[in-house]
Image 1: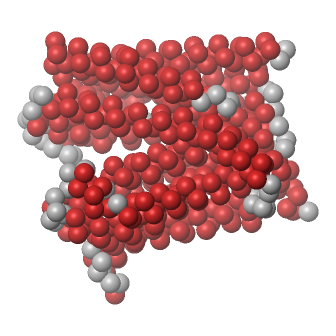
Image 2: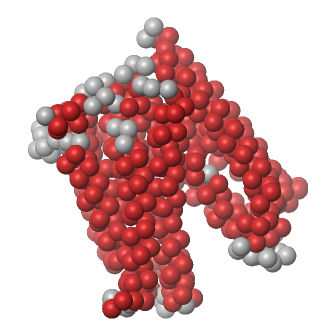
Length: 455
């Protein structure tokens, strides 16, 4: 009977006061995402103590890690959308079939990607610009890390399912514990502390692999052992194919959206590089501080998708509209708070990375300008996640593509050409504002149509 109660528990996004509910769901994800962001940072911190060659080798692996992460995020967005809508409609068995088929697809895809990665390691990293001298270190790390890919991608799907049912607290704390385990294992395996073998750069890969294995085992305990969210994977091919189509309907556009951002970052770095190496370093310092300042928005967007999905499934159209208003107000207020904090502390924070006269002013200029419109950028994140939750992924792709290619990059080029780096940073802030307003109006219009069509 306990299992039946766990399976039929009402979705928690569809009832209760909106503000407290969103706070309760978002807060654990703040800690979880902070911890997840620390994975590569902690690995890099320890590997850097092995010398410049090891650090350089580690740096060449980041593009591959980003691609794998983008695949996981995309599939996770698909899982969150289709599972949350089924749960919201009350069809728990259909949600289970969708999750099971999605996890199977994620596993098959990640195994294929892992095999391709292992077979193409040397030519791939030579193409990325690695020198033959660094290849042995890169291979030493990646021949272990690639086996992490299935755990990363399938793990993201499972964690998205937990968020889809309203268990974002469990998801956040599992992410936090996994990162802590990774941080504890790093020095033991890299430097051979406490009797462990000294594996050097390979030790960082082993630490990541082991911590993710533990994460997925415990996550599966909750998903199946406690909540009984999985069904038998042996279903008619037509049903499995339909699940995969539903997953990819959201997942592929979400992957594309995540790829757009690093592509744009590469172009912006090229623009900044015209102002010297110090400018690039200063911009890099700001880029290390910014994700931490935006962590609340990332966390909110991670629960926005399930919120919109569950309430669409439950046909709570008034709640959807009110949720948009609550999220919009929160993003703007929190954005102002972050802008004030970074305006006051920006120089102090940047000084932790560098006190150079060529580096520090650039970082401070960015942190005193761009955060003025962080609130609008938070709205963009939540709206994109909301459209995915509604099963409408293309508006998110259009919003992200328009922000980068139609608004941001042209304005950035004009701004830096006439007014230097400050002009580029002002263009960044303006682009956030314009796209935030566009995204919010688009979502509001869509929700009004939904409400009128079902009234």
